Image 1 (cartoon, helix red, strand yellow):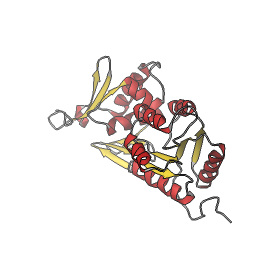
Image 2 (cartoon, one colour):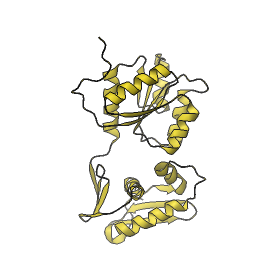
Image 3 (spheres, rainbow, N blue to C red):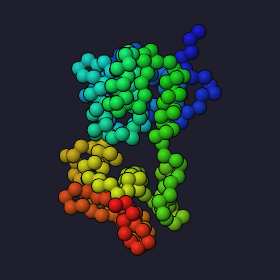
Image 4 (tube, rainbow, N blue to C red):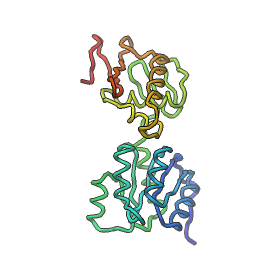
Length: 246
């Protein structure tokens, strides 16, 4: 009898998976496989529905088919890289098996490529591998700041600070991107999943709170620089107070 789920010994962390697949039978198979592996998945049959979901919900990994009724997986991948970024892993699962198709997808930003029909354990192993590589280590230290990614907490000089979920996510993202000029719109899209029509003062309010709660300033080796009309840049400072990221 064919195996319809992973063996009992299969252990993987739960992954939130967004799937672009127009075949209803394949969607149901994905749901069966991933629920058995303790993953959660959401399936979408069109690029329009897929990208709309990505604007309001965050996923750990995406699976994209190539051939779609009104568009293509390549167009969907292009949208993901332009609007969501390069951090989220993307696997192409498609009937296209020509070498040129594989090369095209990988060059366009896919992280992996599987030819249909996918094999259960291989697909789960690839998901586990990509999720493990894209996930930060459990804790990271930035001078006096220690971020516990699993516990979703930040400590300052060993003392945990109470933050809301969005305050934690914003602080985490800023510390992980020192020296980069980050627009308010980019931060909204990255952390809130919202478009540019949303009031950008949301970012200003949250950033002001985390600066105050975490005591971010030159005395702790970090500085937040507002860029008028655009956004912010967070920089590490040396002992003399000069930026180390320029």
